[in-house]
Image (spheres, rainbow, N blue to C red):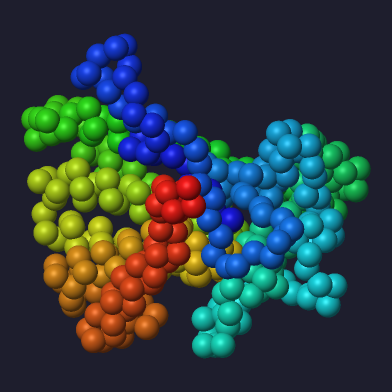
Amino acid sequence: CIKFRPSPEEGIETKANNSDDNARKLPHYSEARTTRYVRKGEALTLHYLENPREVSHATRRKILWDQHRFDIGVENAYRKFLHLPDDVTFNGISDDDVGGTKDYDYDDQTNRRRAIYASELVNGEFPDSSLEEHKAMGTINNTTNSNNGNSKDQDEEEDVTVTSNIEKSLDDLEEMLQELQHIFQNTKGALNQALPSSGAFERAAALELTFGELVTASRSSLGNDHHILLSRCRRMHLDSIELVLSKCSDFLTEKQSVELMARFLPTVQMLLESQKRRLGSHHTHVAATYHDFSMGIQSLLSLSSRRLLSLKLEGMGSLEECSMMELYCRREKERIERLYPRDVEEILEMVK
């Protein structure tokens, strides 16, 4: 199930402070949609985590215990929690397992569960975790000291440190990104005059580069191109590029715009692959990423088709293939959106 929260445009019309000028619509319900038929009595499930959803296993485990009082457990318990068959053994899912075959089914339940499990692996190993904050780190440190630097314990300590450091960096950078978005929103009317004096353009450009560097460093330290934290890294990198392109276009040269798009497309392609593995091919997040991919291809085709081909993206070895990929992404985005028509009001009117 996917839950859609009500937007300000939905709901009942009301007046605030008895003023016609303050009349607005207050939402009065959320909407849940499924992408397949549901049997009578079958349970419907929703994602407990909303923003951000892409957190490490250790963080997710602690949040779910603190807020909902159930434990997804460490490696063996987590495999049972995901209903992974006992005969499914692997150290991850290689690109050959997925992208290398046209027969791979992104929506097969076992494939998705394998992908969810694989998205937690750090350098091929499932990371340690605890229900209590920092308890896992303390336990590992004590064990490591008592065993005179046992290599397995040291590896577990490094895994916990790697994910926690990346999450801390993401939290700090996201706060900076939100601050910049707030600045641009509040200077909307006089953007050209406000940006130079505020230094917002330089900060936005520097932040985009920092996100790009974090993606590269995280890929290296995690040893897993499709780790769940990399999805958050890439998503925020795309947000930072979009911010610079949409709000600072008057300050960018054509070459700078081309290079921003050249960094945008590899990031969005990897994000799309990771999302499809974990979420399947019908999720609204996948639709949004298809849209980003389509718009990115369109932009670079118009700005510099030579630079686009130089990226050597999978399935985009010629201009014809690039155009076909753009069309495919656009159609997939439209197909997924049709699965969630948001027509509850019409349905309710029909059954009255």
